[in-house]
Length: 80
Image (cartoon, rainbow, N blue to C red; front, side):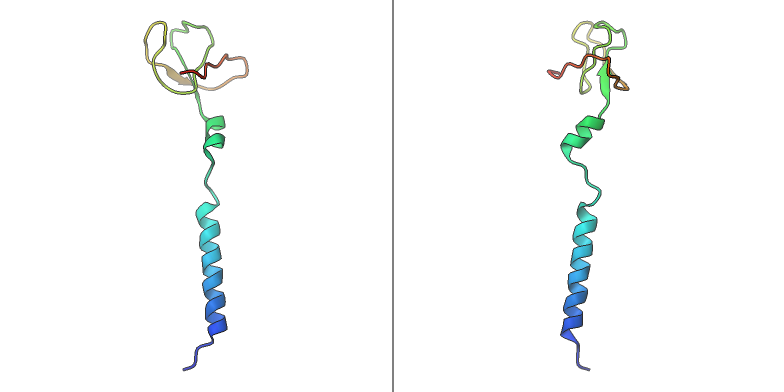
């Protein structure tokens, strides 16, 4: 049986393109993930409404920071 090589090449090309598009279609960049990331805040509110970009401990009372929803009014400290 003689194979139609043009058809085989086209099928391979389509499969490769579908794989490439599906592999990179839903990935978010690190910058976009940081924009959506939560804020962290001291549960005792030692520094008022101040938030931090990642978990850790409060620099004042040393309690673990708790995750909170970001609000525009919060002051964010990016040094932590």
